[in-house]
Amino acid sequence: MERSPCSSMEDLNKGAWTAFEDKLLISYIQDHGEGNWRNLPKRAGLKRCGKSCRLRWLNYLRPDIKRGNISHDEKELIIRLHNLLGNRWSLIAGRLPGRTDNEIKNYWNTTLGKKDKAQTSVEAPPGKSTKKIISAEFGATEPSSSSQAAEAKAEVIRTRATRCSSRVVFPLRPPASQVTPLQGRIDQEMGDGAPVLGSLMYSDDSGSHLNFELNDLLKPRDGEIEEPLDEAMFKDWTADRCLNDNSTVGLESFALFLDPDEWP
DNA sequence: AATTCACTCAACCGCTCAGGT
DNA sequence: CACCTGAGCGGTTGAGTGAAT
Image (tube, rainbow, N blue to C red; front, side, top):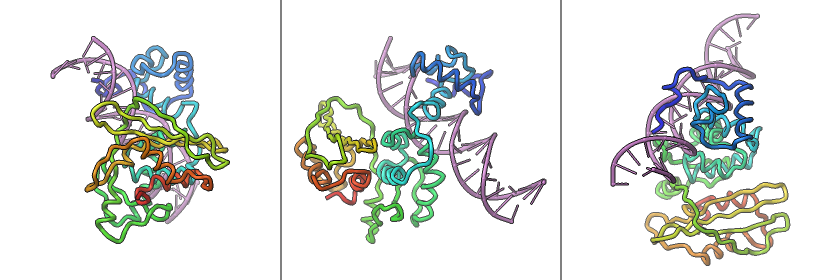
């Protein structure tokens, strides 16, 4: 197992990357593609460990990295996704094109986390399954007056990334004029009652696009009877939630969609 | 102007997971 | 099934920087 190769190897550069190192890394990846991080430094002529190269590329050098401040919509999305997923930064980042898990993690820890902490009277337990109650400042649902209800709302749904084994694309109602194309999908895991995965993808005129995994959002809460999802349910659900002729599908809609309190 | 403090974020570290043998 | 390896993830650190004193 790879155990601390960076710290165990002497004669390796550490700390901030130089422009020359960046150039070497970019040049190598442009020529040979990503992957094989362990051997990459030697081949690229870098005195860095593979881990460091990977991190540098993924968090800083990748051409599709979005630079600049987190927008309001992105902030709201981060908050809601964190409410659902907890500190699953990579999953959250996967829903924010151009943003990295490290960036979102830093943003949360330095900005949103502090705000949240300051506004949350109940101290959240430490660890990966941190429970959060999102402040109304961000447009999220107010905590219920009932402590039990609040606790239920604050429960972080633990997800696990699952590889999709199939994809079904089916038509939905005609989308609002400014939203195109729109599609939904259900991905069914093969075998013995494994969870169904679904997601929604859309893009609008501004080029924004989002993609949400639905499996854990649709997981029954405690006390509820677990029913396997099927395509018909998914269709009904999409029809009922937000996709009708008069609606505008945008970040707000998905924010609504992500809010567990809004679920029947 | 100098010093201290607070904040940001790139980078590192330790660990887990998935895939191959 | 056990082991090994590479890749990825989340927590933490520390250098750099700007604001406050």
